[in-house]
Image 1 (cartoon, helix red, strand yellow):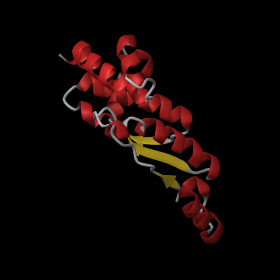
Image 2 (spheres, helix red, strand yellow):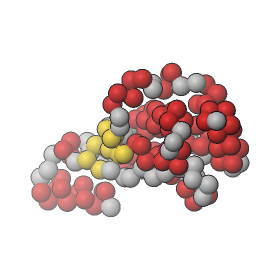
Image 3 (cartoon, rainbow, N blue to C red):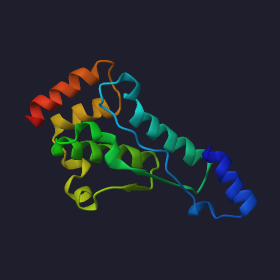
Image 4 (spheres, rainbow, N blue to C red):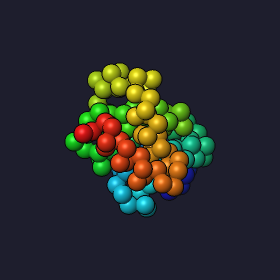
Length: 144
């Protein structure tokens, strides 16, 4: 879909590719529903592919969506946002809808290493059992 829109905008309309912004939609992970487990990985892969097939375009997304299932657990949500930004930006995400004050306060390098391991297990869907194990561990260690 993005590639088709890109071709029309660039080739037919004469739009500057650097003025095109795609938002592949960041969806919530850690919901307990297995079909949601790969949403962060899917966004990261989609970002790489869109950047490959639509040179010069920009990628944006609403970062807080990623950890909506952890609402009420601010420290954990903020760790998810920071870790997601880290990986999505490395994949080519250019801009995100974020709480700008928290971006500096919650830099990836500042996340508690134990929390980061569990966050990235969920975020990157690293282990088949990570959702039940990591989710429970996160709640026990960092939320209660």
